[in-house]
Image (cartoon, rainbow, N blue to C red; front, side):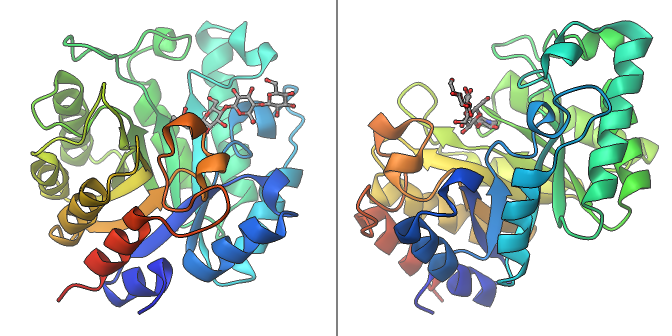
Length: 302
Ligand code: G3I
C-alpha cells in the first residue's frame, strides 16, 4: 500500500501519530494526518491536568475534538494517560495518602467512563519506574500512597471500560538488559500471574544519542509478548531520523506477532516536543523524509 496506515493495516497493525487539538485547524497538518495515519494519541489533551483541572470538574473539550476527528475518519484512538506523576493539576500535586489515592482512582474511573467504547487502548499508568540501575519504582506522590497504586489504577480502568486494552507505558525500557526494562517485565509478569488486568505494554521509544536504539530491541518486544500481552511502540521519535534506524524499528515490530502498532510522537518535525532534533517522518514543510520511505518500504516487505 502507499500510506503508513494502509500498509500497517495489511500487516494487521496500526500506524499512529500523537496529535495536538490546537493543530486540527492547520490544513497542511490535517492533510498528512488524514492521509497517512489510522491511529491517534492525544499528545496532552487526555492528561490529568487537562481533563480534571479542578477536582471533580472534568473538561473533555479538546480530547473530544481529537477523538471525534479520529473516529469520524475510521482512525483508532490510544488514550494517554490516566495516572502519572507528571502533568498533575495543582490540586493533585499537593495531595497525599488516602485522599490522593481516592482522587486518583476517581480520576481513572471518570475519564475511562467518559471515553468508554471510544478508546482502543489506554496508557493506564505512565512512567512509574525510576531511571538508572535500581530497578525501583519512581518516587512520587502516587507511589507514596502504597506500592499497590498501579494495580488499583488498572482495576479501576477495567471496571470503567471493560472493552479497552489496558497498557503500562514507559521510556528507557527498550534495552532488554536495562534494569528499568527488567523491572517493568517483572511487574507485568506479576500482574499476569495474579490476574491483575493488563493487556499491553507501551514502549515509548524516544531514541537519541543518550538513549539509542538498542540492538536487542526485538528481544525486548518478544520477551514482553511472551508474557501474554500486546506490545505497542507508543511514542517513537529518533534524533536525526536516520532511515536505517526507523527501518530496524519497524522490522523488529513486524517480527513479533504481538507488536500490533506503532505511533510516532507527532506528525512533522516542527510539531515535535524536541523539534530541534528533527526526529519524525515529515519535515516542517510536510514533505516525506528518507525515514518515511524506509518505514513505508519496511511495512511493505514480504
Ligand atoms: O498549553 C500551554 C500553554 O497554554 C502555555 O502558554 C505554555 C507555556 O509553557 O504551555 C503549554 O503547555 C505545554 C504543553 O506541552 C502544550 O504545548 C506544557 O508547558 C508542556 O509541558 C507540554 O509538554 C508536553 C509534555 O509531554 C509534558 O509532560 C509535550 O507537548 C508532550 O509531547 C510530552 O509528551 C510526553 C508524553 O506525554 C510521555 N512520554 C514523554 C513525552 C515527551 O516528553
